[in-house]
Image (cartoon, rainbow, N blue to C red; front, side):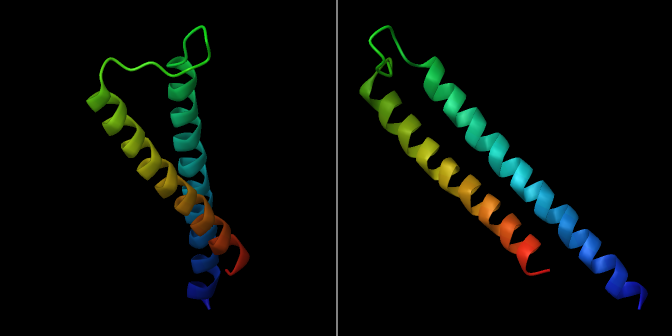
Length: 79
């Protein structure tokens, strides 16, 4: 009986942590993109390689953050 009381609380805590981490990462990437914008509203990079690597890594990390948010929501829904 004690185990059934403890497990849902841990699932809720993990869900909130996953959602918080996912939102923080998405905010951080959005802020980086905003700060790279110039006066014309376009993102500026020092080289093609820098653009390629940065955009690919940001898409990957943004996708992983979205998965963390969705996993946290599913944990809350199906606990």
